[in-house]
Image (spheres, rainbow, N blue to C red):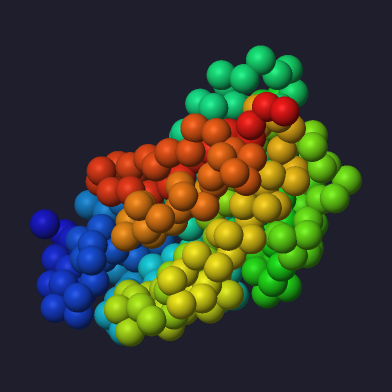
Length: 281
């Protein structure tokens, strides 16, 4: 074992003792970031090249600063995104939301499907859809100027139509012409603040986390936005907390113009997102 791998082993134990959920992965990721190699190449770093600043970044992660804030990058499906303070760090759970959305769009008999991403944050969902559905026309909106600093960096050179604004009133020019609306909105109940992981509670923007006493305030508003934007037969996909699986589909009722409302599990088989289809007239 070379020096770096020995240090990584020690760092793993320190991060585990601090309650970091994935201590080995994070210790290796920090080592790879600092030494300019891939995680699988740590064994190739000569002992003489060990960078003592490794223990500085380990200490930051030990204090529960998000790994992605330290490295400045987050991985999402086939993307590497720039992230940092002011923008919500995309989570692996959201990848299953995008996977379902891609399958739904591909199943549509539409040559150039129009997609809207509400509360885009880092741009992860919009960029993944633009990349994986090549002929799609993707539009995204974000309210926070702090988040948009990162969104603009990630979307530079992309074909996504990015706008700043309120998701509840966004894209009036697209009313009735959208094939898919997707969103990972804030959905944590204010009453759950103390139970949120420190990485999110202390570092993600509050605007991207909390939404009323039951966490569903914004989703209720987005239901109306989605209905306004979608064409008849168009589909909405909304992420929610795994504890809200029994509640969100009931927001998209037949009385409000929806059909086929359902919940779907993530890769851990926990309820993660709801979908519905705008009813035909």
